[in-house]
Length: 176
Image (cartoon, rainbow, N blue to C red; front, side):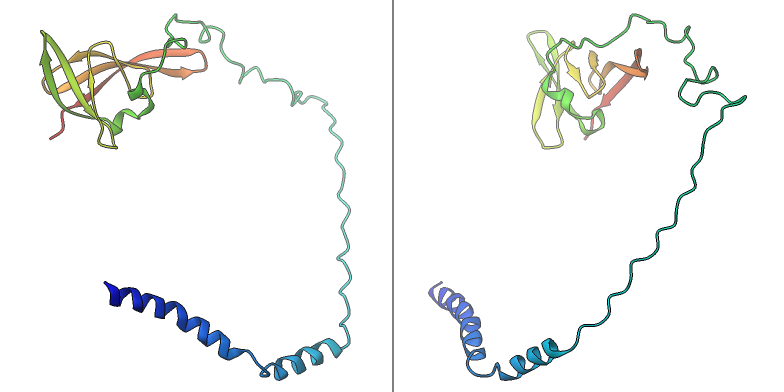
């Protein structure tokens, strides 16, 4: 241990001694070169490139449509934009497991406690969480509906289009 410490101190001192040997009056060649470079006449500066003028374009609509107004073909269909009444509760406090993508969560088992079944979920960091029916998982508002021996089933609320929501079934299977 002591010998190792001495070797480390010696390793720091070697570069210091090497640099100390570089000083002195050996700078004469460098100073001569610098003076020679400074004595050279400056070279000519290249002229700036000529900037080409850009042709202007005046938009004359004629029979064309106004580019700043939505096209009738691309306008959203009013029937599709109807609210189907399904939407996630934005005022609900988010649970911890909702910050993880569903595919990063692993079911590792179940636990029976007081006639209630709990699911055991492990995060990618290795933290074990206990969940029950009604808890939320994943980033798509997934609510647990069934906890089975080999899988946790949930219903997610996902967006089809702005303001359009639909339910989707998802499962987190037991992993070994």
